[in-house]
Image 1 (spheres, rainbow, N blue to C red):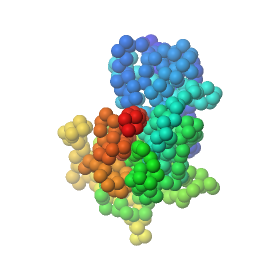
Image 2: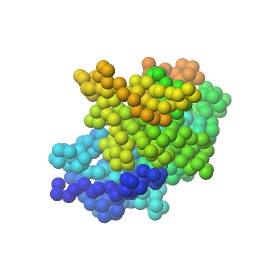
Image 3: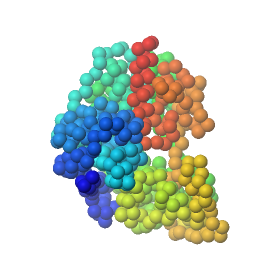
Image 4: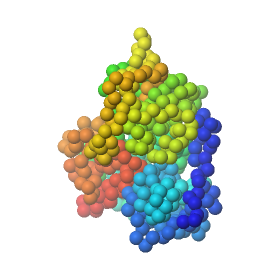
Length: 466
């Protein structure tokens, strides 16, 4: 308990707010060993109950503390395919670190063992030194599996099916693979070279990848089975349908969903105007509506795209924000102005239908709602206006509706999420499985990976029985 949690080295805030390089620089070998040595090696392993893929956390930390980083990574990779990704973007403070005994003893989850940071170090070291543990595949089964989408759930499912000996093909609608890891999470949080490394790993397992292939339009699921001979299908198309607030002015020029805003910047490289694949709206005064990680990403991206002022408008207090504490901290450091207990009432435009301002209301917190968070209550007569030329709406996403709309007999719930068997992830159509955000709604990378792993096990059992 006398050993403090090792601070993560990072770029200076004033510098990083104007570049796309990764903010967190990663541990040194000595820091990783020291942090891993803080693990108490609890016999009951409470941290594992917070991990959706049940990584043997004390097991890998014990090896890392001894300097055996290759051994540590081997333990991680027994259950997790994307440690370099999860070590960066998973909300460990709400998952594994939430249950860490050290954090409980110190009465502060921020003083738990920094599990994700050590995980990241182990993965980065192996990648940078080309010492990743080898992966072996079972003999070929002769069965074909189609994987729709290439986000974390799909990557995990495809890898597990390939390891089981099946012939796997991934169908991706965009021109690059990675799903939300590529189009949603910015370069300064997750370098795209890391995602590409994982996609290359899939190809090394023999997985075929078809890009610019939109299942539901290019081909329907029924065609994949009846015409192309796939024995099983996994749907991992995510939650890419942006939600809006339904307020006046959302159709003005200069209003974007966070999805579009981040996709143009991340996937289409809008920040590189000389080489960008897309035009981009370079706002100087930007309002971002929302309080989650996507809102943080959008507000921080706006700074890097040249905004002089960025407001983050959220109708509850900072305590209720669903965003990671680390992301909130970084956004504040970089100069984003937080306007909590406020919300947009309408967006104002000029005679040419371009955004010129946003009218907001002030709020106070009332009684807790169904989620346990205190409900925001508008304060009558508290309207005020902010001068902005850009509004980014980051209030959540719904499940991608294309597959359900084009697949007869596929059961969905009232929110549009595909309904699956909780043990196998099979849908209402035999041989068709689903997982990730298309089932859960917008969730975390590691939860999506857990879905992909469970679906792969379901597919393997189904094909064995078949």
